[in-house]
Image (cartoon, rainbow, N blue to C red; front, side, top):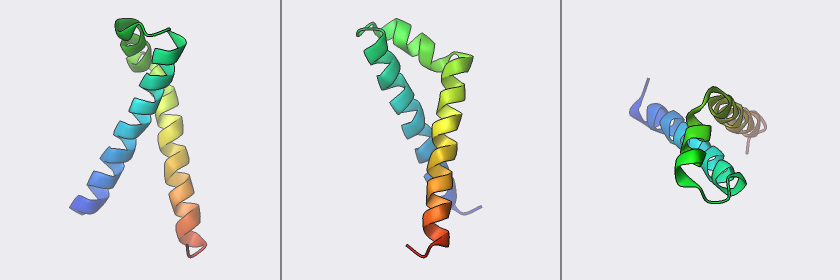
Amino acid sequence: MSGYLLGNLLGRLLVSWLVVFVVSLLMKKGQLKTALRASVWPWGWLWVLVLFGMGLLGAVIRLRQGG
């Protein structure tokens, strides 16, 4: 596995978690500790994996279409 691929995957995972954290922060009305707890709880990680998978799927579809 090249460094580029590893960095790409880790970056996508980090951005996915950040999106889930920001959404939970908005839903918890700015309560930082509660939002952090919600983003690392199993449901939060499920949403992180869903976003991560959607990003990978989108990249693969774009690559297969030649774009």
